[in-house]
Image (cartoon, rainbow, N blue to C red; front, side, top):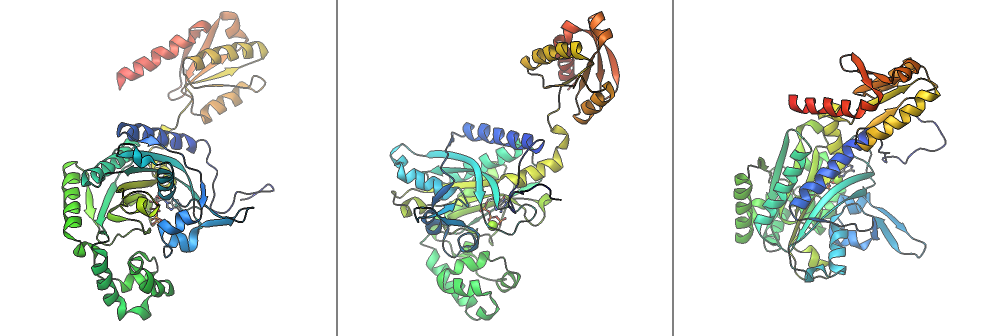
Amino acid sequence: MSSGRFQALKGMKDVMPPDIYIWQSVEKKAREVFSSFGFGEIRPPIVEATGVFTRSIGEDTDIVEKEMYTFEDKGGRSITLRPEGTAPVVRCYVENHLFNIPSPQKFYYAGPMFRYERPQSGRLRQFYQIGAECFGSPHPETDAEMLSMLGRFLAGVGLPNLRFQVNSIGCEKCRPAFKEALLSFFAGRLDDLCTDCRRRYHQNPLRILDCKVEGCREVRKGAPRVIDHLCEECRAHFERLLHLIEKLGISYTVNPEMVRGLDYYTRTTFEVTSENLGAQNAVAAGGRYDRLVKEFGGPETPAVGFAVGMERIVELLKMAVREDLPRPAAFIAVIGEKAGTEGVLIADSLRQDGYRTELGDGSASLKSQMRKADRLAAEYVFIIGDDELRAGELKWKRLSDATEGAVPASGVRDFLRNVSRSQAEEH
Ligand code: ATP
Ligand code: MG
């Protein structure tokens, strides 16, 4: 269905009421939970020099190879709409010498990301992420805190049936032996890999483990697992993390196959999935990236972070909590101009008290105003007509069960206050 002269670009969506209310409540919960863990908001630009991403995410990854919105600006510089949030935050951290402030430094961000992907359900070209990054602690306790914070946030917005998958992909010390093992495993199977993976074999064999091509998935069955090639320290780090999240009551599975689609990760990686989302089922993902700050020219600084996909969360919440959308507490139906004036005043006083209030159109019939109140799912309708004006009383009607009665024109605020008090007592 398309009408009008313009449409939003493919894979880009308008967010508007009623969905926006879910977005806003998710964002509010994120701020609340993240602040309680000592994280402060950071807002880097959404465009960066292309190198910020190619150098960190890695040349052989899907994101850099195929998905980036890269342009030349009028000054001939190569710039890119950010495909993810970690690299810009690291760039900001190093550029502003934030490493001079006592660590750990903890930040969160929320905003749009851009990837030129094939649009489908749960996969857009402009999508939103909320993410968090913690700089300066190498300890598994910090990884556990991040997982706990993510879990608290997701549970706080009311998401059902979530599962944490965790893995460790080691450090530069365990990498060489693992690379060797991969090379010898794939050596006799090169012909069955896609062309990308054949190139990856020489440049970055770890990336073969993240290839989405069906044939490559098949070929890599039985491939060596990073987790079996961890050095002493990485193994201890991972075991301590598992012990801690066990204690924290986070339900998880170890998924030795998960390597994540970005090159900068070291040690811990994780994803949160929901059974309810089908093929695109990761709602959040993250991991440790102990080398990235140094690669950006800063001092050696271990770090760990995650990003949450807003659209996928909102999708899940829509399945779970449709009825939680904000509804007007009051709809004021008015008949004629004089009643209209009274309606404006009453609505104004209700809104002052924080009641979400809608006002009917006095030139429309009562019937059509009632239909509108119904469509908005207002809790109470107050009706003002000539009779009511004369009597100084309004008629009220509760839409859920069609109970009705009368209330003095000056007592509408008290009336709503009383019903919300008695509702609170019932719960
Ligand atoms: P996937 O495996 O689904 O492609 P990814 O590994 O590319 O995800 P990350 O870069 O880790 O994703 O981003 C973290 C989260 O952001 C994902 O778990 C998902 O919820 C969301 N996300 C990623 N790409 C998209 C997209 N194109 N549209 C909507 N949400 C996305
Ligand atoms: Mg992806």
